[in-house]
Length: 502
Image (tube, rainbow, N blue to C red; front, side, top):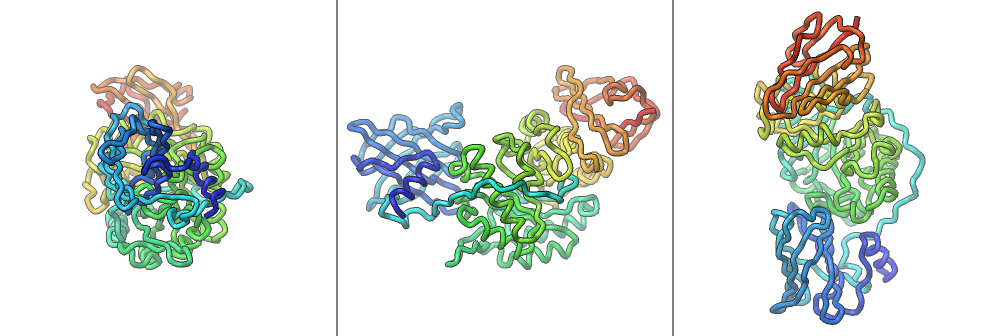
């Protein structure tokens, strides 16, 4: 690797070439933590006389400041603080050297790390497992014809994280059929992070030992009348520390197509320190979108870049059918509500073949009450959001199954008109949302974000109508000729109806 090329790589993630070493720790130190726990990717240390400066860039948690770096007892000691989360407490980190090789110990947020690394210099090409991957210029918009309605299915991450394997994926496909979820509209079985092994001598990415035959697995899922999805990152490592597609985009797209996959979730993750602005992020997604198109196989392209850089305005142009509007969901009401009510994307940018994605469903994972999960499902349906389940399908309770397979609620989400609903009235903790439907009716949702049950009165004006001729409760199926005097909405609960005008 030439000095100029190494300098370009450093500049891509905001670093510069180090000056001549003045302490044993000076320089750029490169790390590669084996999965499943992601570690530090790069540490830069500079000394100026008695003053030591530096920073660390992590695979998952972003750039880390070095506070009060000093050498004591032969170790480099410093307090670490995540630059993007300054409210989080600082952590004590230490770096020791053994035979010139650094060993770092400390914590990233709540997770302890202990990681070895090696020095990267202009003369040591082997110190970096990644080659500098220059992005092609942004090409023409990629036409999309997939996902006329929001995709529905299951993804492994929320329940299994990176602890996923061939046997479990097959079991989820079996359960999708036996529970009736497939027949309710859920079609995708998506493998998230954790399937990747190493690249062979030709750079072709191989699955790890947990996935002995990807094509056979895809064939099995297809035999159940289902489709199958896979995951990668445009960075050198995925969120869980596995091999990403950095420098191998077209090669990986071909592998996914050859194996028979129908869906790709492409996660910015470690790529955010290589592609950190609107231009490079957009081009990195276009690169994969074009590579998928070049395979000749139809694959849903899911953009996971956390809603940055106004992704809804260019998601379709890079070949995407859905794009994340937020960071990761977790199985608790405050996080779910913050995403669903406040970070579900611009409704004007969503519609057939391109959807705002507020992340996967947590229904069935046990962290919320039945009323809270009903709010979750109602919000996602009103938002025309992709419905990707995230629980163990083998352990679906009757109550959860009834919620996930309610055909009236699913029909609101899958309505052919593709309108993303939005709030039309707010009254303290209460909200009224409206979503016009293809048949001329209007879906209305009543949300109570407060901690106590409350009554809310609806009017025809909430639906943009002059009068109401029919009301259907979407959760119970009950119908009536007119709106009641008021609706009782439970704490953190929801009511969902469809109304028809005169």
